[in-house]
Image (tube, helix red, strand yellow):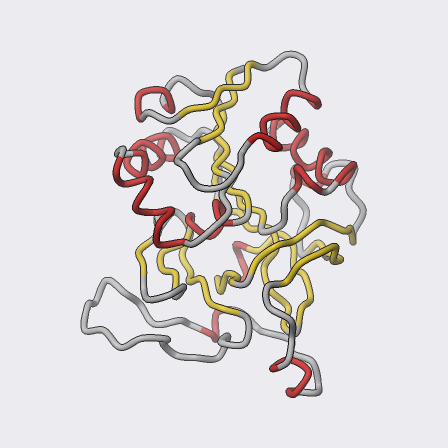
Length: 235
């Protein structure tokens, strides 16, 4: 099996490659940076650390966005990690409004802006408003606490399964992962595999058919993170 890790100049992907190399002895781990290399893979990981806008521009500059779409359309599994998960969605409101890959319906918003109908005004119909009624946020009873969260959300936090999935093989109903992020997804509950609490209950693991995303860093989350990565390889 060939597992591709997309290298598009955003963040250090070395830890992801080290993790994959550690957990599998029967797969070839490829650092892919060209569109034709992506199509040679059996599974694809899209990691990332940094700003959404520059990340999507880097993907487009090498036509990697189209290559990822073609790969996903073939039915092969894709896993987005941290910023890579956010790129899977339609729109990000990070420092403006940016179109994502659109593989999963939803938006990316900053903590504390979950109830904004729109962060920026635009007449472009390709930028849908944030549909907050698609996801039932469970906020803390003290709104002042929610408004004074430390951003970014950094460190270990507990995740809660919302449904069964093969990605959770040998994983308990609640489990800790390591996070570093200031923005999170707003999406349909049907695409949420797990949630995490940080002022609001936000989607921490998502899935639409063969497209999966995890907001935390499994490669930095020790045994549980490694098990999730192994389960992805086994899908």
